[in-house]
Length: 250
Image 1 (cartoon, rainbow, N blue to C red):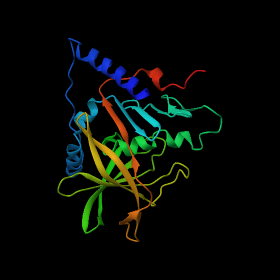
Image 2: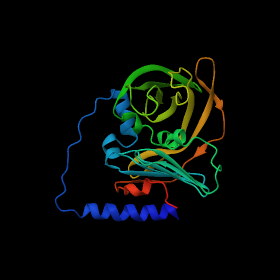
Image 3: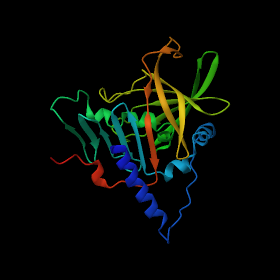
Image 4: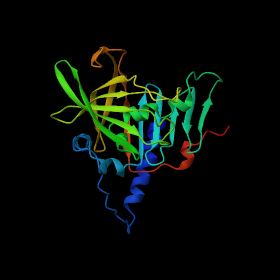
């Protein structure tokens, strides 16, 4: 029901926007990405299409994740709790105190980053570096390491490596470090396989991801857990009001 309501709101907002007579069209500035990484973005729908979107939403089980793509305000709604980021602080609202067992500050945008790949790798303040490929089932996947300038986000020492198909430029794997708790750089990477995709409003976004184990050389071996599925995807040029991302008032 929440997803249907959200869709109705966004449909109205987009319709109203399209009816404006004196719309100003701004030319998108040319981005300075490595050529291979630019081809990955093109394969998934292009950066220009991504930048036209204002709202993104998807489900993981009973959780509904909704994000403002400009401000990165986020809400995660579920039957027993809600949490989010209102632009100033992270909040948690529980039906019964203690029902949510995680860390809201760590979790609120965790799956947003995994779901919005590869486009979040085009954010400001990013440094790109070509790295050695990984190999899986006899196929090599080239990669680019993504690191951040100081003071970018809550974990600027986090690193990502996107690996892609050398022929099609489809994103295939994501390696990442977590420095949220330690606040120190790490060379310990987790590895995710992106195995299924869906086209949503012109963008190619994941339907499921699977964490993999690695060998001593860092190459993937076998799944480490069952796949995480993303359902009911929504990408829209309509913008939600700021109050949507505020903590509910009781």
